[in-house]
Length: 323
Ligand code: FAD
Image (cartoon, rainbow, N blue to C red; front, side, top):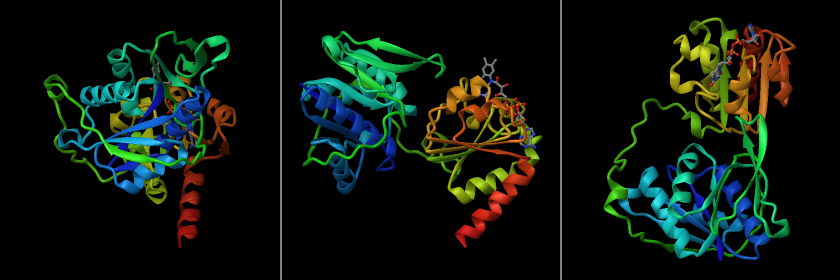
């Protein structure tokens, strides 16, 4: 019996959410008095893989097959399931990231495992049970799911557990999964970015704006602020519905769900459907001229003020800081 964690790489690097998933998986391994292995798919430098040991992974299976260089849901799920079988894993942990959301249910089906997605706490093992607290109804409620299957799959919400250093000695071995032809009916040959802007699902910092901006012509200051912070840009649904911004930037219940370290919401009211997609951000900063705007209730920092006055001042302050 062991615990396995999937460590998702983006262009050969691990994001903070990966180290968080490793920290969480290590804590489960400790609860079960067992060891933690990681499965990495795609080309990742050894130094990056070694960093997993700092958070408690004692072994890494590294898959570097050329056809798996880029993320493909079906094939990656098969590799993770095969690694789980090889490691005799009773618990498989993934980050509930953009790709983790697609992978976790597939991995669970392949392993005939129970799934808890959107987990926010360590499992409660009292009385021989395995109960996982998770978010429900777009983050408006919690659910406690009891997993009774022999193998359990858990997808951890980013920013729910935090990073916990737990250095152990790490061994890296290469793993050649026995992929079936059906796993490779679609493979991603090449990724060509449409822009060189930071991609929204992967961004650590996001600057987002809503209808309070009045019109698409006012997004220059949002782009400038995002550029200074190395951030991706996002928007509320009405903004993309009105074609002020591309639909790919729409976050929320019906758009993309994101969990950046910093989410700056400008001229967005904070409707429940918007919060559903951003509430697991680590730090939320709200700029709104209405002190009663619902967004302030979930904000870590709030500025009551006119975006057209506050944002230019922020830009000037950042420029001065950078200089
Ligand atoms: P508004 O509600 O119009 O708010 C604008 C805000 O800007 C106000 O708080 C105002 O005080 C502030 N403001 C105005 N002028 C300024 C200024 N000069 N400076 C600073 N602040 C200013 N919405 C989403 O975003 N994502 C979703 O995925 C989503 N899915 C939905 C699904 C369903 C089924 C439904 C029914 C709705 C959904 N919505 C979604 C819409 C959601 O309910 C809200 O209508 C929407 O989020 C409001 O967008 P907004 O905050 O940009 O606009």
